[in-house]
Length: 325
Length: 290
Image 1 (tube, each protein chain N blue to C red):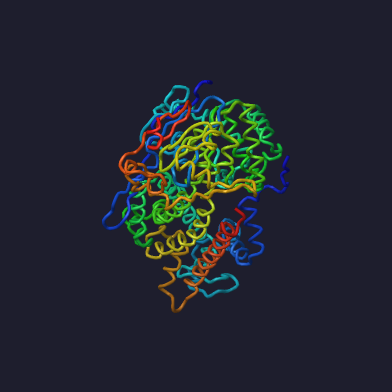
Image 2 (cartoon, rainbow over the protein chains, first blue to last red; image 1 turned 120 degrees about the vertical axis):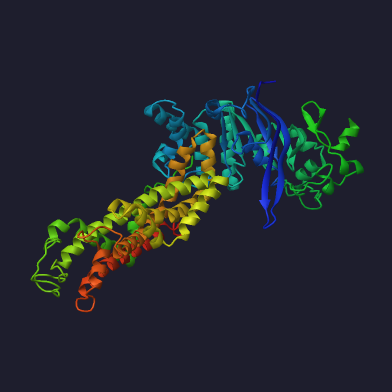
C-alpha cells in the first residue's frame, strides 16, 4: 500500500439559485452531498456517472475553483481548503487540472510559449533561460514540436490543443492532475493517443490522476480504482476490474450494461433504466436511485443507505448489500 | 508524431483590420477622411494661410475669395485658418475625453463583470443612472458646476461616455470569465489582477476599440454643442462648435461662417463612423476563425 497523496472527506457543495419575479424563490441544488475518497501516490482514480451527477463539481471543488461549502481536502495531510493565501498558491502548483474543451481552455490571444511560461514566471521558477528550457522539454514530453512556442492555439487541432493543455498542467511539476473528461471532446483515434500520453506520464513521472469521465471504456483502461456517483453521492467504489466485472449497486449494473461492448457477436442485455435522472433540486426521499431501481424495497423509499465496506477496498451504498453483510 | 501545419502567426488585430479594410471601401474612405482631418489639425501652424486671431477690420464678413478661401468672420478673421486651428482644440478635447472614458469605463466594466454579485449590481445600477442623462445635459451640468475650461470640458465629455464603455466591457467579461483558460489560471495560482489584466482585457479590447471610434464622433458633437451654447473653450480660441454659434448671428447674410465648420464636423464624424463600422466588422467574432 503506497502513501495517500490526496484525501477527500465529506466534500459538500450546494448551489443556490434565485429565480422568479416578483416573488423570488431560492432554490438549493445539492451538487455534492458529502463525498469522500482517497488517491494514493501514482494512482489513477476514476470518477464516473451520468451528466449532472456532480463529478465535475467534485473536481473543481477540491481545487477550490468552486469554493466548497464543507469537508476537507487533505494533500499529504495538509488541508487545502483552509490553507492561507500564500500557502494555497504553493499548494496549487501540486494540484493541476486538464479540461474537457481544448478550445475554451487556452487563451486565444496568447502564444503557446506564453501560455506555458506564464505559470513558471508567476511562481518565480527560474530565470528566462531556465523557463525557456523547461517549456521546450515539456513540449517534447507531450509530443509537440518546439516550433509550437511561437504559435497561437487556433493553429492547432483539437488533439494538439489538448496536448498543450496537458503541457500547461505539467510545467509546475504537479503531483496530481484532475483530468475532467480529458478525451470526451476528441475523435476516437485521437482519444487513444491522448490516453497513451497520459498513461506514459503516469508511469514516467509517477503522477496521480483524478480521472473524471462518463466513458466507462476509457475509465476501465486508465484507472486502477473507480467511484460511481449518482446525484451528488458516491454509490459504489472499488478496484476497476471488480466494479465492472461484478457491480454490486443496481445503478452501476445499469451503467455497465448500457455501455457498448466492442464485439458485434457479444450478447447484449439491454437492461434499460426506467425514468429520468431525478432532479438534484428536489431529490427523491430515501435512496436517490429508488424511483429507477428494479430492486427497490419499502426501506429504500425512506432511508438513504450508508456507504459501507463489503469487501477489502470495496464500498457500496445499497440496502440490498446491507442485508447480505 | 503529429506534425504542426506551419502557417503564419496569427494576424494581429491591426493586420486583420487592414486586410478587411482593403476589401471594404467604406472603411478605407473613413480612414482617409479621419487621417486628413487629423493631419490638417496637427499641421495647422504651418498650413494655415493666416493667423486665426488676426483681425482685418477692412475685410469683415468677406465671402470666400482668393485671399480668404473660406471667407472671413465679423472681425475679419480667416475662416479656413480658424477651422484648422479649431480642429486642434476640438479633436484634442474629444480624443482625451474618449481616452479617459475608455480607460475608466473598461476598468469598471471588467471589474464589475469579473467580481460579479452585489458589486456588479450596484456598479451597473450607477452606470444606468449615468446613462439615463442625455450626454448634452450631463456635460452641461458638469461644466456649469466646474466652470468652462478645457480640462473641465474634457472631464465633462469623458464622464458622459464612461457608462457605455463600462457596459461594453462588462458583457464579454461575463462570457470570458467562464472560459476554462481563466479557471486554469486560477488553478495555477494567478492573481485576480493578472487574470483581469492579461487574460480578460486583451479579449475585451476589440469591442472597446470599436466603441471608442464611434464615441469619438459623439464626443466631437458634444464638444461642439457645449461650445455652441458658450460652455466650451473661452473665446477668442476657435473651436468648431463656437464658430458655428458665432456664425448664427450672420446666418442670412454670411452663411459660410457656420456652414464651413459644420462641414468639418460632418467630415470627421462621417470618417469616424465609417471607420468604426469597419473596425466592428473586422473584429466580429462571427467573421473570424475563432
